[in-house]
Length: 264
Image (cartoon, rainbow, N blue to C red):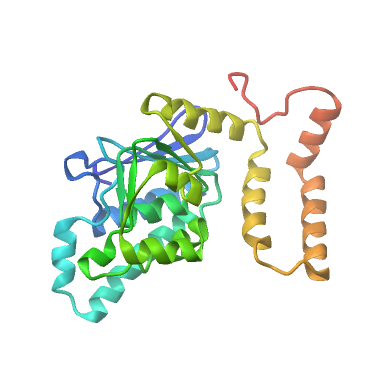
């Protein structure tokens, strides 16, 4: 793993995955995509990891695709381009399906594929001066691999506008559109992320993972007998699980559950 991607797990169990090419505005290429995929897989499979923060160093969150990578892509055949795009699609899917809560910490500009990274995270906290752009059509391209996640975050009609216009929009508009959860001052950015982490870490780790999976399972599905059975079976399993029993007993006994560290 090169220094273009930094991976660290602190004593709280928070994995920080940090883009570290500030001189290139954290633009990513195929090598960084492979490294990000490995980092997301590592965080997802590590039982010590309770939450994941996707961040970057420098002035800007991420400028999207690296110019050198795009130059190489321009010479690829359609088959080579398909293979290349599938690598990006796999990385995004790994982040989106990561079985831990994910938070994007966004400062500065987030253009092109960076918007996809943000949309794949469960929560996004942005600096109020951040700027966003789905810029692909300016290059005669389309935001294809990131589109499922951006459309889910922002909605179909909004996506049609920004996919086609490539307008730059503010953090406040990104919040109104659902791409980011909060827009705060630069000085408040880390405090807001840590406030969210504190809230997450006080909850049962398995319950948090199951709650995330629940949203994906239920969203868009018909509310019918099958749904009633599925959700009833789900909560029944959780209630009798070791973590569910610990949580219920801690509540009834008016004590802190075992998964909460004293510092939290």
